[in-house]
Image (cartoon, rainbow, N blue to C red):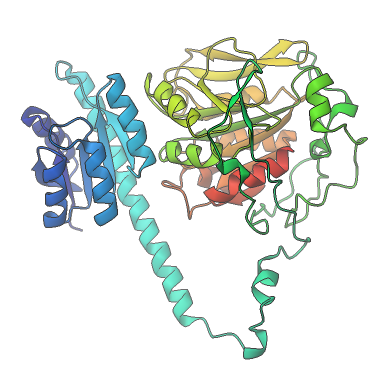
Length: 469
């Protein structure tokens, strides 16, 4: 097989040489050309038609961000951004990921040979994953085209206006209701104060029938017994969605049909927030490659009155997570912040684990829960690790817990999602392959048969709102 051809873009001749040498240490790749700024990069992409581009963020004449937008519009292909650690470079890198860059790496320190070696390993791993993701997308598109070409046309009698809707409905259950339309008027701050919301996407209606899939094997019993250090909320304060489904679950679940066994009806959500004491619900999200774009799509569609805090692990180096949180905060009706050790979790807020720290959720007493940041060894090659965050939720049986895994390389988060699923977690979600930038972490969870809802990215937020409310 011919090696993949790469275009290297950087205004520094020395850095172009370093990156080119790092790339060609893998015989599966060759440098097809170089460019010194964004404008030349656009011309070289059109001329050379490379398989992949490495792009410096900050360059004269036209920077990497501006060039990326034009390249993705004219010749979409995987682009890996190389970013410095200054504040402006980090902000632009986050925007680049949002606008379609495959991933990014921190530019190596010229004075450190060990750092150059480490950056080279990361770069080659990302390039391989980018080519693998592209191959899978092409294979899936080819399969779908062949299936469409060979499919026999429907009988004329079947071509009725009602037929498509009937085919979309789950076989074993009635069509679930749409997620409630909740255009937020305010955005909650972690301290409970309201601020005007710039997000309007939360007011969108949910898409059509539930497309979630379930593993065919039944899970163990869903009985819960909370440890002493995790205070359980009184039964009267629990919503119907907290009722544990029976061990023998239907093959096609529907959020519209609660299990037969039910606790007494809870008061309205507003009353609970006004009079109830302690946190009752929690959502935990893990993602990696492609995560910033996926998090934007998720968080901008979560309403400001969402009755659970959201804790997030996104694989990123130190400092970049703060820029990510600031960027997401401009889109989401929720208050999005980089997590701080000791912060008590509040509804209406999302907390992103800082790069270089593991994040755990631990009891804070009096029915509250707080964030604990640690410098324990990397897990699955990552710090923060999704598995570490999910594992911290296992003893918190007094909470209604919801776990989500979205796009990312590797398998981080899958093993502990399985443990949560087996222990009786309320719901588990995974992003489906069709919308993942890299279908690694979600695939691992699906293969462990611990995912209740497998959904394309655009359907996760409305389905999560249904599950939590």
